[in-house]
Image 1 (cartoon, rainbow, N blue to C red):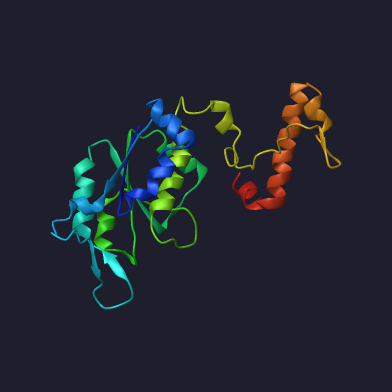
Image 2: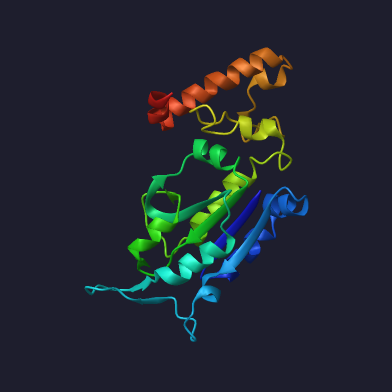
Length: 222
C-alpha cells in the first residue's frame, strides 16, 4: 500500500514513522508512507497557503489552490483521497478494514481555522476521529494510518487484529500475564487450565459482559 500525507507541518510525523509497528511495516515494504508539505504546491513566492475568510471571522482559512495542486501531483485512477475533518463520517474499525484494502491513499490534513469549502470537491471521503476539535488534521491522519497499517498482511499476526475490540461489535476480552497472583488478584483458573474450548467460551462470555457494561450501544448494533 502507498500512503501520501499532505500537511503544513511535516516535522510532526518524524517520531510516528520511526517507531514501533509503523517503522517495521515500512522496513518490510508492507506500506510506503510519504509526507508532503502543502506549501511546496503554492504559486505564491512567499509560500502563503492561507488567508482571511470572506465575510469576516476569526482565524485563517486554508486556500483551495495549493491543496488542489498537491492532490493532483499524486492522484492516480487508483487513489482514494481522504480529508481529515470533525465534520466527516465517524471513524470505526470496519472503516479501517475497508481502507486497508486500498492500493493508494492520499490523506489531506487541514489546519488553522478551517479550509476553503471548495476543497471538499477534490476528495473522496471526509473522516472524523471523534466529536471534538484539534488544531489540525495531522494527529487524526496518524490515527488513520496506524489503524490501517496494522491490518495489512505481513505487518502483525492476523490473529492479533481478529481478536481486537470492535472486530465483532464486542470489546476485547481481558488478558493476563505473570505473576499468577498480584496483590491478592489472581489470574482466572480457566486460563491456567489448558482447556482451549473452555478458554474460548470464557473469553466470548467476558467480551459480552464487558461490552454490556461499558458499550451497550455496540450490542445494539450487533
